[in-house]
Length: 329
Image (cartoon, rainbow, N blue to C red):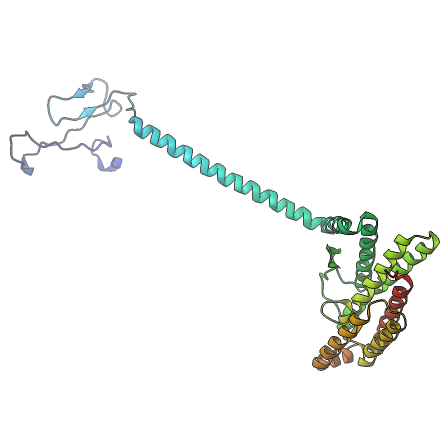
């Protein structure tokens, strides 16, 4: 096919030269000149000569197709195109299926993120029910919820945006700050909010156990006191590590001595934990003494005072509650 501007007649058909007779030697100079087949649209009807369909007897032998004639492709070619179309359709369908699955997964993840608090809380209840029964599982998760909302309340009082709790079965729960906290002292205050709320919740469960004479509520109260006391350990990512960082070293060692005294006088199997954790925490504080000193000096005196009182007071309440609610086996 050529462009219409290259054809003097404006036809746009490119003729194919045909070699001479079979008996004649090939000579380019003896090649017959190509002829053009004009269309009725180029000449008046009187000048138009209807071409003969088939092979022309004069001039180069070329095939002229009648109007409306469309040659049918070979059977194998037809089926090849059909097979290619089917394969392409199958590929598109497969990609559409993968896209649909990704879309469903994305929607599920978004839904889980939106309702992460309720979903993870329900999963924790189911997990604890499998071991302890549904009544204790509900009470235990309730203690964790109150503990975490203690963090949320204090952080939001400071103007800090914080997420709802995320529960991890057999590991507890956590909240995550989503905006900057003003200072390390405010971080310690937010960390102290959880144990304070947890201690109040455990005291409430203890009082209800006495009012209704319920061993189940007593066990739930024991769990609340123990969880709160465990979170006051000044190690790792626990609440106590953030609180003790801004306190004087004497407050930490004083709380440790009180804990040892209470445990020795009223054994509850916590003595090994207190001794081991106390030694590790003391070594960690000595190793990072410069960081602790900087945090201590950066915190106002009034904030250090009430944080220290809250830390020692909550730890004492928890040790007392553990001794009161402990049921020997």
